[in-house]
Image 1 (cartoon, rainbow, N blue to C red):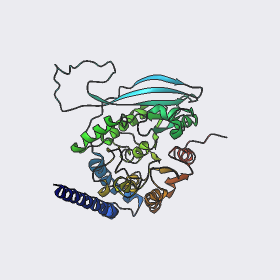
Image 2: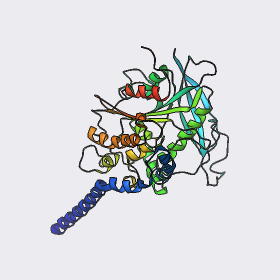
Image 3: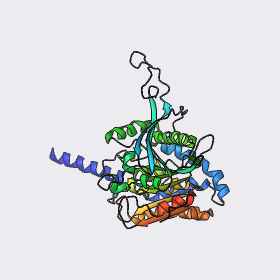
Image 4: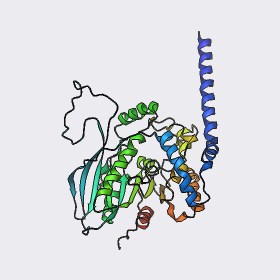
Length: 389
């Protein structure tokens, strides 16, 4: 009857409200929980930090991102020239990463045939566009900037300098700008494209203890290793600069890829148009900036509030340089959230005596590449002279 229906509806509403309040309470005290988790990281000196941070890097990779044990294939790089400008040449690149393992192939359904793409059957691959300046001198090795697109983006979005191009508003052609400043540039394709296609991949991965970045990290490791083999690349000067979902990548991938054990690593990272108080953003039901009621249902990460927020993730870049680029009018979050989280990073670098290796540039603008302080940051820390006016 109607009275029973109203009673059940009211009870369900109370139960949902109890769950909401419980989660909000956990969110508000999560920073104190993380402080306890990270108490074993010794910040008394840079040397002590470097000794103790590896435990936390492994924890973030294993528990938050989800590590996939893998053996990288030979990259078997396939390239073709697609850009020929007066200042630079561009090549489309495809690299093998690893083969799907563990399954026995049914030859009736999946014959083991050579692939015209150059990839073995069931291979995870990586791809992107490499931009090479035309003024390279014989034997010269230059720094690289990896320029990462955002949600639903493609490498070309970071390259186009046409103001009428739909992506120019966000990217300002920063890949092209940087190659004209003398850097080698690589613009990779990350898999957060295809609407529900990549979100379903994330949802299927979560019960296995994996996330989308479980696949992105090895793709970038293979890319770094391949870039390091190019005769005109200085393998010790490969930087990362990402916008939006590329900024999300900036605090998750470079911190995991520090180099060593036969692998190349990222020497610095720039997070543009994404850095904020991320736990608050994904959990709060009180602020308009929240992901809680959006269509981006893949955005949540396992137990993140009890493992690492953006400050902790960024601290794993230490002692490598780290920078944030932020527009006042960026709808990702208000300035107050960004400042709250970033200055934990600044304090961390200052206390270790390397405060000059982290910066934030705040400009009067929207969700976009600003390309002022970040370019100076790249020239400074990659030891590459700025072009003369």
